[in-house]
Amino acid sequence: MSRKGVPVDVPARFIPVFFHPETRPESWRRLLAAPPRMAAVAPDGPAFQRAVGALQAAGTEVLGHVDTDFGLRPIADVRADLRRLRNGYGLRGVFLDQAAACADRLDHYREIVDGVRGTIVLNPGVYPDPGYAALADVLVTFDGPLPAYRAMREPAWARSLARGRFCHLVHEVPGQAADATVRRAVRHAGLVHVTDRPGTDPWGDLPAYHRSSPMAG
Image 1 (tube, helix red, strand yellow):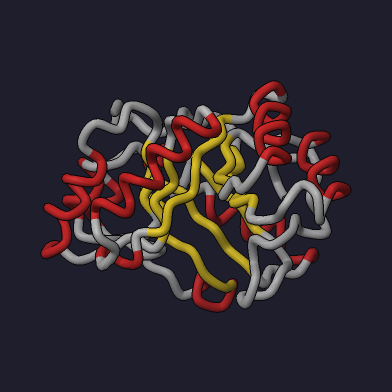
Image 2 (image 1 turned 60 degrees about the vertical axis):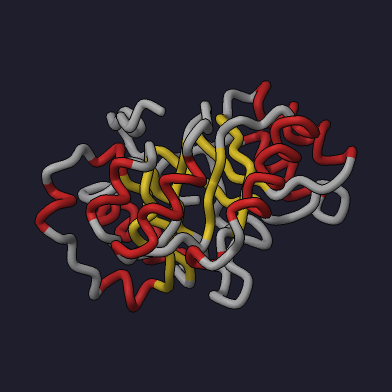
């Protein structure tokens, strides 16, 4: 694990792709037409094997999604998912979702990431205890709606690290606010994704404004 994050010259997109290629084929076509720098998928079945391969061929680094239930899910279950993603889909990088943020769960996550050879993204969705920065290549330090994002404050410890170590995911962003939201995000994070979709299912499809420009979608 490099813990160097993602190089930042322009905003790079990280998209949670939590929609199926068979039920949303047009969305997958749009995704492949404007592929992100990095994506997380929750693969289920042969259709995902083809879709993941196409996304990788388009130049996207694809990570496998694993829920950690804020540090409450047994490590054996998490590792079983990691093996399934590696053996069934060839995915070594991981997106550890619903990660804990408190210091007393650090040892739990140290054990989870031990032995993972690909890129590790941890998603506590907030700025966690700074000890988590040593466990991941990228931390998702915001995952929520636009009103909360406008009130977000970056802690001092995060300012000492490169922006490429952080990712911000912002939903409920109307089209007219998308570019301004991305401009704010890149002051704090090297990987950014904004969507107009609601908080009940923000990653169940692409935003309406998904396009090749790094400034929205």
